[in-house]
View (cartoon, rainbow, N blue to C red):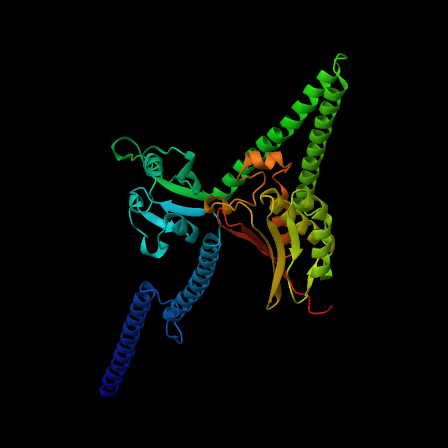
Length: 430
């Protein structure tokens, strides 16, 4: 009997010990699970459950760790996709803003910040009207958020900046339920901004170019047509007929020069006229150009010469360089009164030579100097037309010099002459 009681007491003690151990183990597991959950909630996805040897707790710990592994992998993948999206958005040429239904900016890329003159990092979650300046764009954003209406318009911010704005309505969660529980759809606004200033300027230049070409061709064509009709009158005397024929010849020659310059400029701009740069002796090309214009200069009572000292070799297309010299010399002759002088010189710098074509002519006002190399731009239209200029010579000079990797410019004062200069790369071997 006593042995039986002792056995019962021992069995009860063992069972109690096992129960207490199980209770303690489950309590530790529960605390570990709660700690892992709190760490995950705080964003630490590297935390894992402590291993358990056996039982339901071991299976649960294993499943929780597998779930955390998958969650961590998915979170890392989402992070890479977000970084890729941010990289793409920040390197887009289009400005992008994403605005929530309450009018707050949720996302703004770098281009949009540059267009609106702000730092995108400082204006997230700010009201869009504090960043967006054009009033009509703000109104379009509000209409998109309230009524779901898209909008597109070109906006001239300043005389020097034209922007293309597009507001795209993006629907959020729609109505839920019916009756009293239904709620109206929420609209987000995606704003796309493109700086089209350069495209707008090129379009204006294209229209101006067509108008200028039409105007320049119209004058000689009209003159040729009119004088040719008059020549059909047999009653004209010989002197008048000869005079009219001379005018027709001059106008046709002028039209030929204009078409020739247009073709040259077109080939240069389309890069169809390929350059063949070689080592060129600068003095030799300059002397050939001066010799070409010498007879015309003498008729105009102008002195043309070269005053450069040391010779230099440059890397250039000899034929195109000769054309640059001719155009600059002829331009100087058109605007230099009789008795004046045109001088060619150059100076050497590290890696380049700077060539000057100076004249003692009428000079160019400062307001015109920035545009003097544009096609058909003339400071004095009447004088240019009287001398037979096409208005394309300096534009051709700029294209040729730029194609050689050089720069071109002018320094001038009214009444004190002009200094047209351009640079070319020096040739290290002759």
